[in-house]
Image (cartoon, rainbow, N blue to C red; front, side, top):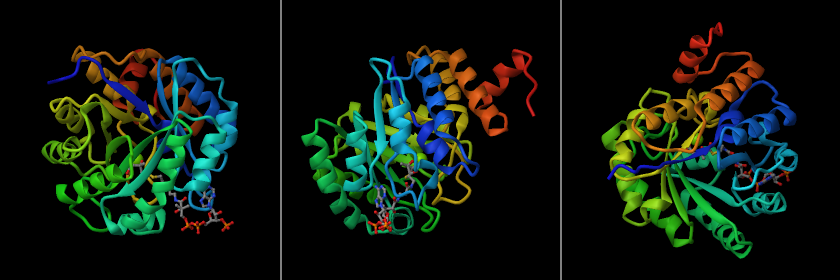
Length: 304
Ligand code: HMG
Ligand code: MG
């Protein structure tokens, strides 16, 4: 069942930087993206077209998209919570947009200021307009393995949102462990609900590594045949509406594990470590990624 090739969707420029407390300039974001392209990333979630009042760090979305020298073969995705966001995304010539709903009512209200059902109704015209423009729609289900406000989340609650997303024509179902409390069997149980309604190629896992469970959860998903995961360079990030949540699992850590298992990613680990060291240097701290720390130490680079 374990795939021999895995696609990693690089979400560092979006999920990683959205929560960054210090200013990150448009030029720094674009430079990071260029380094990710050079390392072989072919799926890059570059920014989000959300309200700048809610997430100020993504306010330069259009400028970031305009600043990228696009390498052929790279697909570009951005977050779009509503039609206003979609308009900006389409003007920036994206390949894919991401609508994001929560598995719990409490998180839905905190993150996008409406109920789950209302969020789905808000996405309905976004999906229609994206499809009319030839743009694919990925759905992300937040808090699928735990919620900072509700606590435990059942697989039934996840499946409810999977079905709502499917009902409005969302093409791909991403299951997200926003706060990183999920463990492998729970991850399998949640992803299996997505697999009941979406084909294997259209289901992915998005694991934050707050409790150190992300690699184990990815391995558990590989056992189901899942071959697409979101990862974040250097382990950057968190979520502004999930206090204490750390970044997504680090791209370098996942690549090291996959290559060690003989699973191809198309990514150049050394170039990823270079990109991780660069952005971490810009942010004034060492990479969170264990693999980058180890490889940089082997290169003789002193880490703080
Ligand atoms: P609202 O305040 O209820 O919406 O926010 P509104 O329609 O009343 O608009 C309020 C203001 O925002 C208006 O401006 C709108 O024009 C503006 P004003 O008239 O006050 O000057 N506005 C926008 N501006 C730019 N682009 C837009 C846009 N929409 C409205 N698209 C809304 C509702 C959904 C907009 C807001 O709650 C929002 O933007 N939320 C985004 C939250 C967010 O980005 N969270 C982080 C990303 S999700 C995530 O990290 C999870 C994920 O990684 C998976 C996981 O780990 O769980 C994907
Ligand atoms: Mg996330």
